[in-house]
Length: 609
Image 1 (cartoon, rainbow, N blue to C red):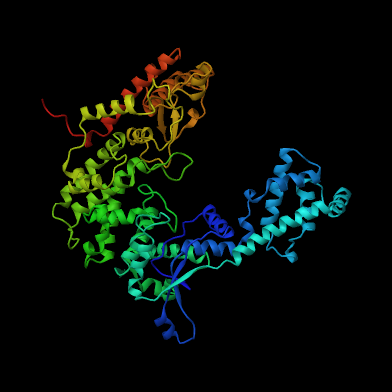
Image 2: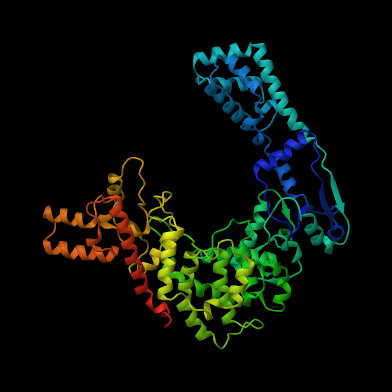
């Protein structure tokens, strides 16, 4: 019995598998399994064996196999009868709820720890009594009290009868499952119809990825794959099924590395592996995915790059036509690399202590930028480089960073889908449209800061902690981009330290501590890290202690003001909530001004009135 290539991944979790087992125990119907007998293969093998493929019922089959191999692992606290627990507690002379919880834990762990429900593997009342004395009553096995209780409880007919009944009930339920008859239907039609049969049968039931329907639909669209990393990602998916004990048809067809490299793969498998590969190569752009879970990246990317709507993804084989997948992949990777390099200055540097920064954009937003680069660079029919590419390349490098920030601050892609992606690519908006002007940027910043964000200084709901995936951090990266150009990581520092702010708060009072107006990004935090004073007071104290001269104090103060983008004269003194909020507004105005200065070459002029 093998698994066909178009079968999908395992998606049932332990809770769902347990529900199937409970249905069998109660005698409920649980559906049939559909198999296909490969008569031609049996005749070709001439070994007297009969060969089958599992067409429908993978999730149920895996659940049953898992139960047979790990019967004890399906036992949980919910399987314990409360009257049984109360009775055992009474016999042990302990009545508290805490002790009953200890009994439940001890019994569950004891059941799960047994290899089988046979006496030779310890499935006996005496063994359970020993465990209860040791783990529930907490008497060590070498103590005299342990031995006394062991003999006492074993002579307690009522206790041993109840424990024996519990053991018989548990093992009896297992026998019901193991003896259950599984309805199996055998399909004997043409093998070419199997993908269609699979697709129809799986149109309902467990909701899987929207892309997995193409595993069967595209089974005949095949090419060899040149990229060994893509091939490796495809086989990681197959191996998750093999790890569960299934035999795959594809593994029998390609049993060694050479045959795996030279075989023809389906378009679904190719885009599955390509999506995993893209997530690995471009972690700034795409979120990582599990080995057996189809990433939408490969599917969405190729669809958008070829100018299709996502809803027309089923037509990809016809749209690709005679184009070689290797050529498409080369162009797609180059377009992705082009976008990644443009955004690298503001996305590359992670926060201190982390390997990667967060992803601020939605998948469809970044796909729209990559598909735009693909469309303006390559001809759709032969993938040759377009004549206008050099001009459009300069436009994209100038405009794309501005559109990227604008669309995130403006929250343009929230809830957006196929139509927005298609329109963005079709219109080439990142090439032919103008990004915000200086005047428009000021309006965008003010709208974002005062109306829509958690950084509202007057909001009672303003959070005191801002996640690094919030737009606040992206905007700070744009503002401090030149100061972090050579940094491997950055530190987030508060202009007015958290401890100082908290010391001024009344009980129950909330100040917007982590509002963007109080934050700066530094390559090295130095003495500002964990500081409890503002930077000007820190330097004053160092001067007072004789650690620095007056000239050094002035020089270091100017250096801090430049690093933090905050003049010392702006710091509120004395520190009150009203003065702090005023400081935040003024500092944000300074940050806006710095952004407009740093990115002036990317911002078009305001229209002349």
